[in-house]
Image (cartoon, rainbow, N blue to C red):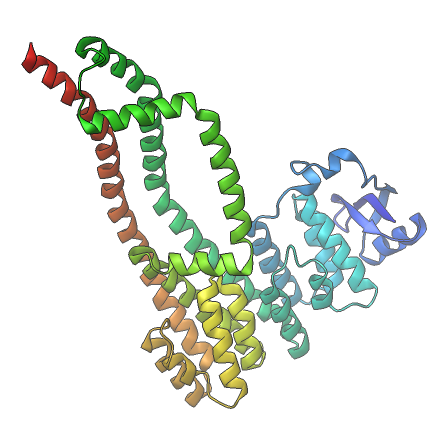
Length: 406
């Protein structure tokens, strides 16, 4: 059974959360072992319809920022000698996200039952990634959990920083694209039919209009009269595309197409290399084997094409090849990565060298994102001007012909 409790910590700070136990008495004992004094406890109404709604507080999405703060604070507390269960209870009290509180509570209960921290996290894979879980497992095995958690927090912060910069760079071009599409649709649906009627009234039904005007009027007429067909096809098409992309074949096809777009290919590749270098370095520092590190990193890259390259490299490493050899034969990874990897393998400082590679490529990503923004903005303005100009030409052509005839 799951219970909702209100309790006080050693500083008499009130906290609420969820805990699973067979009875109220056992739940109270479990809270006491965490150093909490129970104020109120009752069975949770988890089956409530409101709790199942996506927007309910209980089902609130766990943000990356929440996970970073949790990881960094947990690292600090463990480094200070605070027991893991007590640390988790304290962090649960500080977390404002009710959904995250519930996950932490369940993890704490599982640890109290004798489960390792990594195994407890694995039961909450919707919150904690395979990289997170495997690094925690390596940290527990090596007795360096606090150091591993610190590395995880840094890695998550770097990922969030790269994503934030990419989103900020794409914001203005996307706004321009939306405005362009809205203006074009407005002119085609509202203005074009009226202008077309005026032209036909002036020129007569038998008048021969320019080809571009005829095409634009035909498109406008179809959009006005068959709008439900357009909406239906758009909805069904987007649904089928999204469903296809979620399949392994569709995901691979999507990533292959993205990797062929000139500007995006450069940015995606640099982001992938930076993420690969930082994650692989963290796993190696945690004592994870090379093959396991490659396979875990491959899943975290987020690109099926690069993932296939890394899985192929893992097979060669399993057969006795150094990791730098398949990287040097790769058509995706630049030579500098394989060369740095070879130096790391020779010196035994692979993690330190790859961190430098990650830093270098993160700077490259910053420069590439800035370039992307400066390239996309004028392109979007040209597209906007072109679409509006197309409508203007289709309108001004017949009007000019009529003026000359008059």
